Picture 1 (cartoon, rainbow over the protein chains, first blue to last red):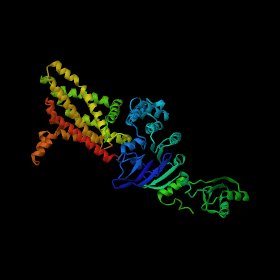
Picture 2 (cartoon, rainbow over the protein chains, first blue to last red):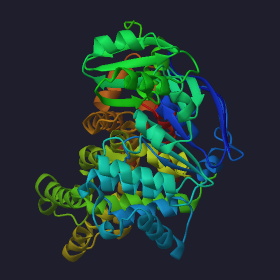
Picture 3 (cartoon, helix red, strand yellow):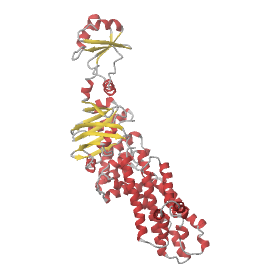
Picture 4 (cartoon, rainbow over the protein chains, first blue to last red):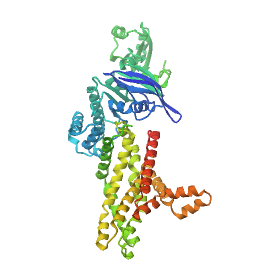
Length: 311
Length: 248
C-alpha cells in the first residue's frame, strides 16, 4: 500500500506540490492527470525517493520514503519522465547493471535481465547499443528496467509520451497485464489513456488534488453526460420542436449538429427518437453522449466552467 | 548510511565500461601518454640533462592533469544531469555515497591505468642508467594521488551543472588555483595583507608542493594524508551539492 501524507514540495519559493495526501491499494491503476507543470512529476519524484519532500512524507509498503528511503526504493520500479537510459550501453549490459544495483548476484543477474527483456520483447536487440534503438524500443528498455525486480509498486511518469499509436497501444497492454496485485501509478496528460488504463484517476492542478474518482465517475461530471446529439437537415426547425420536450434543459447547435442537454438524471433518447418518428425527419446520425473527459478536465483544472460562452 | 562494497563496485563497473565503450578512454590514454612523453623529451630535456631519473617526466604531471583530469571529470555528474539518468541512478537502491565513490573510483582507476601505460619510460631510464627506483615508485604514487585530488575537485564541480563545458572550465580554474597556491608569486600577493598563518595555510593547500615532496622520494605520511583529505573533502562537498541541487 502507498500512503502519501501531506506531501509538499517547494522549489525555492515556488510551491510545486501543495499538501497532497492519498492512499492506494494493490490492484489499483492510478492515473495522475493534469496539465504540464501541475506537480505530477514532482509528486512521483518524491514517492520514488529522488526528491525529498519539503514537508510531509509517504509510506511505501510500510517503509517511509524519508527515514527508510533505501527500503522504500526497493519496493518500487520507476520509469522517470522521458525514460532516461545510459545510451552507450547495450540493452543487456544495461539490464545487467540494473539487476546488480537491485542487489541480485551471480547467475541471478543475467536471469533477471533476460526475464525482463523477454517480458518486453527485447530479445532481438539485446546486443544493440541503447542509443541506436528507436523511441519505442527505448521506452521498452525503460519499462524492462522498472519491472526487473518484480516490484510491488510501479511508478511510470508519462510512459506513452512521444510514442506512435501502435507503440502506445503496446505499452498500455503491458501496463494492464502487470496490474494484478500491484500498485501502478501512471502520469499522463492524455485523457483517453486514463479511460483505457486506470481504475482510479486523480486530477492534479497547481500542486493540489482537485478530483479523485474513477474515470467513469469523472465522465459523469461532464455536462455532456447523457446528452443526445443529432445530425439532420433542418437543424433550426428540429431544435425548436425538440427544445420543448420534457427533460430537455438546453439545446445547442454547432456546425451541422444539434445537442440536447438533459436536466439532471433525465434520459432523453427515447423521447427524442419518438419525436423524430413523429415528424418524419431524415436523421443522418444520432448518438447518446457518455460525457467528455477533456471538458471535465478543463473545467476542473482551470477552476472555471469551460462552457460559459455557450447558452 | 548503508554503504556497501557491492554497491560501490556495481557503479564503478558500469562507469568503467562506459569509458571503454565510448572513444573517451582511447582518446584520453593516447593523448595522455603522448603528451607525457613529449613534455619529458622536449620540454624536460630528458636526454640533455644526462641524469638517470624521471624528474623531467613527473615535473609536468601537474600541468598535464590540469587539463586532462577536468576533461575526464566533467562528465561524471553533468552528463547524468543532462540526460536525466541521475534520476534513474538515484532512485535505485544505491546510496548517494556508493554512487559518488563508485564513480570517483572508476575515474581514478582509469587514471591509474593511463599512468601505468607510461611505465615504458621507466624501463628506458633503467636501460640508460641506474636510477633510484624507490624515488620513481614514490613519484608514481604521488602522481596518482594528485590526480585523485584533481578528480575529486572535478567531480564536485561537475555535480554543480548540467553543462559539461562549464564543468570543465570551472574545474580547470579551481585546480589551477590549487596548483598555484604554493608558488612564491601567489604567496607574495597574500603576504602583504594576510597574517603569516594564513599564508602558510594557503601554501600548504598547494597540490604542487605536496607532490614535489613525494616525487623527490619522500613518502611522508603527512603528504599522503593531505591528498586523501583533499579527496575526502571534495567528495563530501560533492554529496552535499547533489543532495541540495538534485532536481535542477
